[in-house]
Length: 62
Image (cartoon, rainbow, N blue to C red):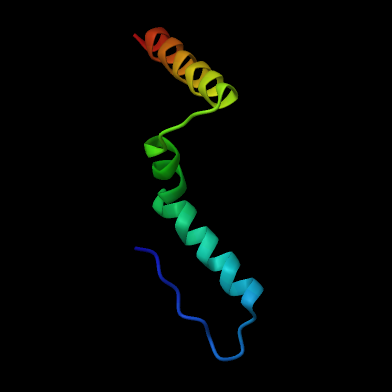
């Protein structure tokens, strides 16, 4: 679980920015998207295109 401590003189904007950075480093949003039940057609296309690109890159390495 991601947690930040807000300093006494720290603004909410900077604290929110730090929190977002920690969440993205922890990979929480990516994990949420993977586990989400419904996937829009556009998201499905993007996911498949990325997977196809990764497969092509791995094949070319060997």
